[in-house]
Length: 501
Image (tube, rainbow, N blue to C red; front, side, top):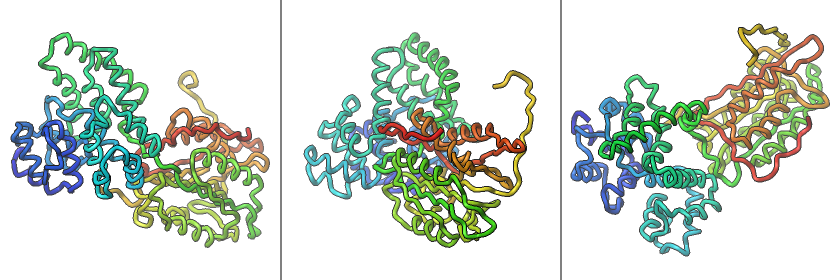
């Protein structure tokens, strides 16, 4: 901050909850209960008194804003340009607790408090007590610490088991540090929890945070013995190419939509088979698609609802009703439309068309606020024209081989069976190429931890290899999306369903 007046600017830009979050992250620095901090100005003043924050040294403020993901503030103030070598002051343990608090919704917090009835005074479990305040009280009662998270794990196992993945990563790195004895725990944990933020800034022309955070790793130990610094540097050089090749850092950079609810959400299947219109034949084989989708999405934890032979207005009515529900306790939404279609629309059994944009409209951030910031996944099995794609011979040159708000149409994925203007194929005995490939790949790749876009890329590859024998006709599916994170379904405990081959 080149001008001290910028600190008041930051203070005004932060919400009350964000100030509480920053105070919580600074608990170890302030050596006092962060609830004593009354405002952003109060926090900045306390940090300044301890010589951790000034106009000339804004690095801690930069780090705090990165952790709470106030990226626009960092850009507006040019803080990234002022970043240079400095050691991190926020403990990995403190960052872990903050990240956990961000993943817990109101219903889950209520359940956590209920399970803590035998451990904490009832007044500490009031409805207005936040997750961070709860963590502080648990620390005060010595129920959790950086080397004892057992109670938290036990509670999360009942309420939101996916959060235990973060704790397991934290504990694994602690054990790794004990075994290796060469890389300090603070560096390792910090590296894992914050590397996604490096890449968030790396592509921005005014940001140099990638260099900043890498140098932080080294400068943490600038006063240590030379051999230790050398080991850290060599470890960094060895780790980066290895992990980058595997894509791990980029996976962290994108983030993952939370999948912690007891039920993933609703999976609506609209299956149009018996058309009243003379221009559309019955869709023989579609019942097999319906059965496969029902089995797979129920296996993935969804509540499956099926609507058959819907007229155009009925289709819209069903989707609008679904959009009007409260999805607060759900992770996402899936909608599968099996019907005839043409470019940009699908048909009801009455022969009237429904634009695809009208199918997704009831679920955008303005019309369905309980699904805001959650993935809405649509899979459309329908022709998009009348042209049949022809096979093309291939010659190769070698061997075969965010701000605080979001757009209302964010977080959608639209998986189309075919590209615009072309037909899609359906086997009357085996179902459609696209839906059958989608179900098979979900069953095979979800247990591998694959994200949905990767799975759909595999579906593209598989369907593109299929050929209709008459005239050698082909089909090319096409996913389109406004997702901002990866969609990774938790691996179900039940064995995968048996599907036809």
